[in-house]
Length: 66
Image (tube, rainbow, N blue to C red; front, side, top):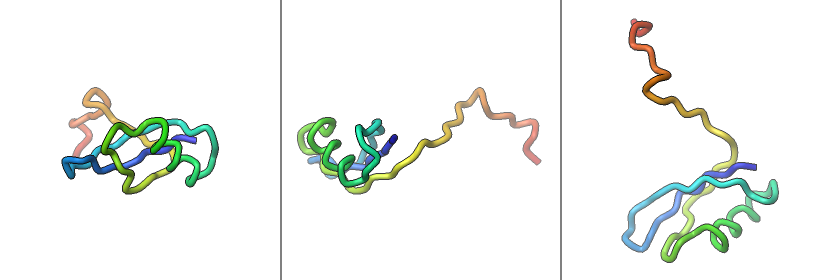
C-alpha cells in the first residue's frame, strides 16, 4: 500500500514523503515512517493512503479550456 505522510520538521516547516509500506495497515505505516524513513527532527502530522494522479505541464491542454 502506498502512503503519503505530511510531517513537521524541527524548523516548524512541513513536508511530504510518499512510500510503499510493507503492510496494508495505517498504524504500521505510521511507525514504519518514523523508524525507517523520517530524518532527524521529522514528526508525522498525518498519513494518507492511496495513489494520486499527477499531471505535468505536457499533460495540460489550454485549447480545451472554455
